[in-house]
Image (cartoon, rainbow, N blue to C red):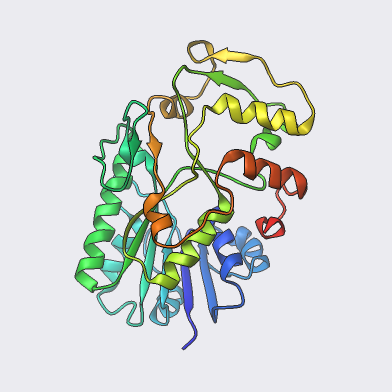
Length: 299
């Protein structure tokens, strides 16, 4: 039987995954919160379903009965993961043909490690409310895996960039800034590597936690400066972190510093297409794909 994939939360990363597996699976369904966005999903080869996190409609239940591979890309809330809550409410036989599932999480669950390297065995000590909720959701999906004897891959993603989401876009919008906090670094991952890693882990029927991130944690101001160099423009002046006008959420990211290792993912056999921000920016600029064209155009 050809694989049938269902995606809860068919957003940026999930749409890239759909493009990655198009042509090798028999069906891709995905949820959106509104009918207005259904046309976008159809254009990406995804059959749209409306899901708002408060129960599964009959058409979703029908699709799930034939689903072999599940991807969950919806953020949890204070009351837990809405998808898992609704699946459990629907009963144990809601997905009788399920072979594998994946849950998209974040390296934010590690919290602050003062710039030290972290891997999947490192202690998680999240500080933000949203990261604590993510960690709770991870544990709930791990329990689901144990209870149903279904392999579940939990992907901890670092900062996502790609077409439409990158420093070039910020320059074009006039919002590029070089905010400097001494010692601060972030990992990043290109959306095409999220899609590629998902496809690889799906075919491997991989279970457990994987950091999906690049090889080069780097200061954010360096990324902006490198984009400016590729564009042939002057980089914006440096702004000290203490003086920067930032939203509370943006400022909270600077309250944590760690270097996330991707060794486990590589040992599983996945090879990064964009191992660092330089390679990613160069590819987007060269292919003129930075404005938002399909990531597939750069592969």
